[in-house]
Image (tube, rainbow over all chains, first blue to last red):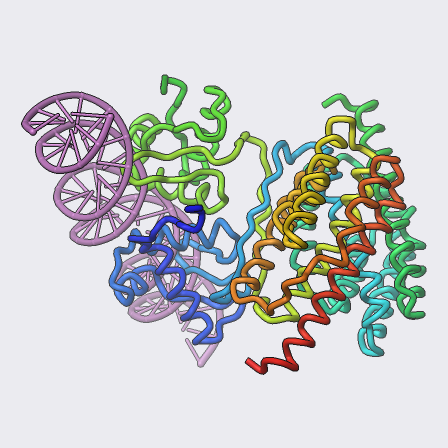
Length: 243
Length: 243
DNA sequence: GTGGTTCAATGGTCCAACCAATTTCTGCAC
DNA sequence: GTGCAGAAATTGGTTGGACCATTGAACCAC
């Protein structure tokens, strides 16, 4: 009965600051990398304490939207718009193997769907871009004997971008972040990616043939091999180095 | 009670504060809903300024880990552990019809994968939970002639939860959020969901039969019908009401 | 019990400094 | 003029103290 009674909003200074700041960014058409006004200036202009400005910026920093450099300034790290939706994902016990596999499952879901959409929507320009990345990757694979992770990633990014849905790239970027944090002190899987290599071209072929279901199937195969690699790597690690 | 709070060491104060706090939470085995020490007490115990404590707590608040109530205190909103991983996800824009379809594509990707994982991993308890939600939904569908969106959503949530990967539920919650933002002033699709109704049970049957590929296929069919419904609704809207 | 009132506790905001890292400017040597 | 070391200004980071606004509990008539 009395369900539609949300709490009333009395004071919300820092939220107001963020809204004003988002409007300012749009007004000035600021993009990633650009510097935004000093905390002191913001405090003066917005008629709030510098402390309040700092709390607001701390929130944006925690969301990865902004980077603060002491002595230098505060810089935009991503595009911000007044109507953004923030969804902090938290993974308990995220530094272990299970966390990595969790992100990989998300990646499998998105990769398969993106490949299928791509097969439907990709035009000549997108196909050319993807094939270009594929060539680069295969070349790197030949010359550097398997260490082609950067080029590999660029290929997948090209597919995501050609899917026509920006959400794919945004979500997968967050997963990639986690992936790399795991790599910092890795589990020693150095030949990672060997087994998945051939599927990149088969995916591209299915996309180029505008065959959504085929592309989806090939993408699933690719992730399956990555998953296998990681599992084997983790097993080896457990046997050889008990930490 | 608040004795396990050793002072802080060097720079990166607020980060150190968070680490210390995470350790404290674990030490005291605090769970969601419980109240954690006052800002003033934390400042005193950790030998930092109250302002620094506030910046740290602001970060946690931004990540949805904690809720502050003026005059009352600061309360845990989720389980926190020292080694958890944060992937802030911010989704840009999407207030138009294209944005709605974009979230639906993400949902298709996750729904298919979650159903497949569910078919592999769901135990007896999870299957019973899902079937219960399914019964509730079918009952609501009968008595209220189609308006079963809440129960519908609970069914899908149960599937996501039984997938064994918490990221699915979190990401899909973001999609649901965008969905609802769109529905504040909806496009008048009232009979929405009729066509997708039968597939809920077929999905459940494939999951219960531990048939991942079948579950994935049924989930894809369900989203396809939803997509069709929305497209038809949008087309009707454009014809009848040019806004 | 019901409904006020008081009062202490707590988060929210503000101010005015100072610290630490960075950038910019200055002036000297060449 | 050029180059470079050091001073000065800029900027985020931290501190301590003060006051406000809200909450919740204790208390008190009725």
